[in-house]
Amino acid sequence: MSFVQSLAKRLFPASWMTAMEEESRTWAMRCPCGVYTSIWEMGGIRYKASGQPHRYGRCRECGKTFWGQLEHRADLLSRE
Ligand SMILES: [Zn+2]
Image (cartoon, rainbow, N blue to C red; front, top):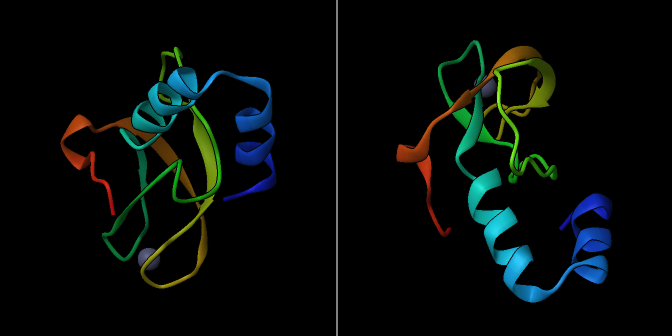
């Protein structure tokens, strides 16, 4: 868990944290190698937000840092 995530865990009730984690897992960015990595897996949180901004992220597959667009991908929701 990243610093941001553990800080949120301290600040918010557990029920919020679960909701934030679930939503953060539905926001993902696609690496040039073709693999999607969720904001949660990158150590971030995205909750009650709209729009598809561009961000820097790190691919969970190849480990490279890349500039990509955040996409709302509810189908990626997983509990690995
Ligand atoms: Zn990659």
